Structures are given as structure tokens and as C-alpha cells.
Amino acid sequence: MTAQKIDPTATNSAIVADYRARTGGSGALFERARKVLPSGITHDARYLDPYSIHVAKAKGPRKWDVDGNEYVDYFGGHGAMLLGHSHPAIIEAVKRQMDLGTHYGSSHELEVRWAELVCELIPSAEKVRFTASGTEASHMAIRLARAHTGKDKILRFVGHFHGWHDNVAAGATSHYDGTTTPGVPQGVADLSILMQSDNVAAVVKMIEERGDIAAVMFEPSGASWGQVPLPAGFVQAIRDVTKKKGVVMLMDEVITGFRWSMGGAQKVLGVTPDLCILAKIVAGGLPGGAVAGKREILDRIDHAATAAKKQEKIAHPGTFNANPLSAAAAVTALTLVRDEDLAEKANKTAAELRKALTEVLVKESVPWGIYGQSSTFLIYPNPTGEKIDPANFEPLKSGFDKLKGGRSGPLAGKIRMGLMTHGVDVMGSPGGFVSATHGGAEIEKTVYALRETVRALKAEREVKAA
Ligand SMILES: Cc1ncc(COP(=O)(O)O)c(C=O)c1O
Image (spheres, protein in one colour):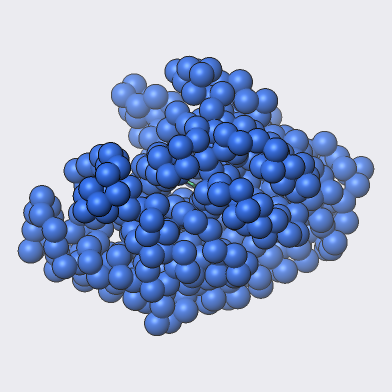
């Protein structure tokens, strides 16, 4: 993740000065935090220069920092909080489970119900194995694909993020040329074939021609939940060629699962992968992940199935796999997702939000773009001054380098701080996740915050026109 470099003293920026003035308590906590936590944070996406806010509580679509500032929250627990914060049914389910025990070290009914719900909702899920995070699910899915096919290479796409383990480090947020990242041997990075997603024919040809690919792994939204959308027909083309060649199609639904629709992106696209990985919403906002897919592939971690086929079983421990607290939250969340179609509710709100934010850019004559799929939105702040009509923004015309590589930086940090000083917290992209609890009041507040922010940025000559 590229650091957003703003001069921490930034005395020349009214936006940064205002941010500092409102968030003294967070600033003081940051001074303590940076002595004991690298960068004072616990996840790279929470990095902000001079410092990020420290949050004290959250409810529904809102959260409050330690200085008492209220925010409309689009961080959404990194996408996990489709139900909004502190949903009463989740709180009740987790509290009930707390009394019954938080870790049995044994099988329990909730994990069975959880798996049944995943299999009911996700088209490709014939069997499921729970993990403690999306990264772990990603790691296991790759291992399963390699064992199933007997091949080593994973075809991935630049900018697509699949967690932070060694197999998927190069090319996700940096090193788009496939060179390895610090701490990961080049030999591990070389097991990935990294491609751009904009040329489907080249991808199909690569799969057709090579005989050493175990899996094709991708985010069905396009890189980083849609910052760089996929061209039309991409997913079906991958399905067709992987099926023909016996390559595992591995869809990363960590973000899109239960969000793009109750059946994930695969249901919306009508394309069923061989394997998918899930996390975030799958565990109802508590820690958890899952690998789901074809029985014959998941059977590689099944004692009886491997014995019957005289195969060596893949080991899969994990202390907190399907822990009772996560399982309690998950069963409650997925039941609500199914019965109240929460994905659809959030999708509708996000569509209204994107429209309203686009109108702000048009009225303020700002040559940026608002885009995004499902219940997400993204602000493209046009860092290089391309000619953009905000009313008709087509992200793919800007291309990968600008959409992904060139978008973070001081400007994105200032946008975040500008929005925060007007009561809205977004992710660094900038953009974020809409929950089923966001509504008209949140849209109105966000419109106001964006309008005030672009005006402040104009005053600081940060809005570039072509
Ligand atoms: C698409 C995608 N895959 C995998 C992961 C890794 O999940 P986790 O953070 O639970 O390890 C993430 C996390 O943001 C993600 O967005």
C-alpha cells in the first residue's frame, strides 16, 4: 500500500489544520501508538498522514471518534459490516454464545448451521471449510487447487488483492511487474503468472497454451473491489477456458460474497467457479473466512475421501476456525442476509449515493469520476488532470496505472481529511462500503461533505482540470 505523504506539519493546508484541530484526542493516542505499533496502526489501510482517527464506538451507519466527532462510516469494517455496526440481533447472538462458552475445541451445532447457510446461498458451495481470515482461506484455496491439479502456477491479475500471504504478495498493491516483495523469496513470486485484466484474449491464450497452471484467481469485481473494473465478458471467458483446460477457477469473493447479492458475485454473473473464498460478511462482522466449492476439491482435506482414493490428505488445523462466537454472529447475519435481502437494500442506497455524488462533481465543475459496483462507491480524483466529464465517467478509459497505481497519494489523504472534518469517513481509495443501514440522511450528509471538501480543495489548488 502506497503511503499517503503529506507534510505532517502541513501548516499551509487549511484542510489538514482543521483535521488536526478537531482530532486532538486521536493525535494524542497516535503519539502513544507509534511508540509500540509500527506506524501507530494495525492494518496498512488505516494509515493516514499525519495520523488516523481513533474510534470509540459505532452504531448502524455511524461511528464516533475519541474526540466525540460523529462520522457517516463508509469504512464498514473493511467491508465486513453489511448489516451496519452493532446490529441488535448480532449482539444478542454473540452475548448468548458468550454465556455458553467461547471455544470448545470441539465440533458444535452452530458451525454446521453456518456451513449449511453458505451452501444454501453460494452457488458453487458444495462443501465449506472455515478459516480465521480471508488470507487463510486464500492460502488454503491455492493449496487445494495445486493438490487437485498437480500443477504449481497460479494465474493472477495485477492489483487484485487476495490477502497478505507469500503466494499472493507480488502484484497486489505494488510490484506489478511480478518482482518479489521484501521477505518473500523470488522463487515464490515466480509461481504466479501476473497479467493485466484488460486483454481477455491474451489471458485466454495464456491458459490455452500453458500446461502448468493450477488455478486462475481473481476478484470478480475487478482489482480491489472494483477500483479497476473487469471488461465485459471477462469472467465467462475465464470460466470457459478453465473448464476446457481442467484449471481451477478460483473466485475471490471475500468482498463480494453476500454483498454483490446474497449469492455473491457468482450469482449476479451467472458464472459458477470451482472454488471461492469468503470472509468479512461470511462471519457476520467477526473474524472468519471460508473456502467453498466443489466437493471433489474440498475432499482433499477429507479423511475418508482421501483414504478411499488413496491420496495423501492436506492437513488443515487452525485454532480459531469456526469459533463459536464468529459462528453465532455468522448464522445470525447470513439468515438476515437471506431473509431480508440486505445486499439488495445496500445496493439500492449505494446507487442513489453514486448518483448524488456525481451531481456534486457536475455542479462544482470538478473533472473527477464517481463509480463503483453493488454497494460500493469510489471517487477518482484524476491526479494527472485527464479530460473527464463527471456526468459520463468511464473508469476503464483511464486504465490500470491511473485507476490503481496513481490514485493514492497526498491528494487522497486530503480528500479523506476534508470529508472527515465534515462528518464522513471513507477508505483511502477514496471510497467505501454502504451498509443496509445507510439511508437518505447519510446520503445527504455525504453530499454536503463532498461539496465542502471539493471547495476546500479548489481553494488549495488541488483540483486539476484538463
Ligand atoms: C478481495 C480480498 N481477498 C482477500 C482478503 C483478505 O482477507 P482478510 O483481511 O480477512 O485476511 C481481502 C481483505 O481485504 C480482500 O479484500
